[in-house]
Image 1 (cartoon, rainbow, N blue to C red):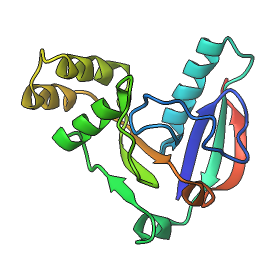
Image 2 (tube, one colour; image 1 turned 30 degrees about the vertical axis):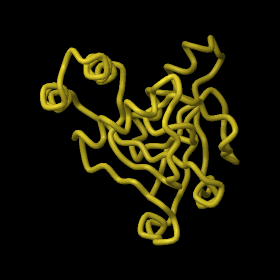
Image 3 (cartoon, rainbow, N blue to C red; image 1 turned 90 degrees about the vertical axis):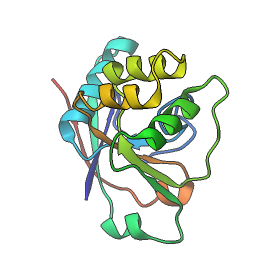
Image 4 (cartoon, rainbow, N blue to C red; image 1 turned 120 degrees about the vertical axis):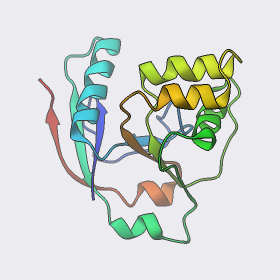
Length: 162
């Protein structure tokens, strides 16, 4: 399977040290199966950093890794209460640390994040938040949270987003 990572630099050798905390699935290295999503994130990062370039790095991963029983994987098939609570817990100022090597599921983009905030603050209950979240188009993300998992990525190429 091909995976894409949006950044302002080429990332030939991903690392866990540079990931931000308080993200959807916790501190890790984030990829997506959709080139367009990675391109979008690369442009966002370019704008935020006022960087010269937006870059997408492309990787290959053996599909078997997703079924490797020696790796702890959390998979969310869509927006549901389990996903919502997992994202809220990871975005807290003191996030709940999980022990997963890989996490796969929907992205909480800016539109989705507004609803997540309303849920977290108690303005929306879980069913109302989920109903609202399902109205948004969501993209996927596969995040890597252990050295063994991240070493399964094989660099293919990178390209600049214009």
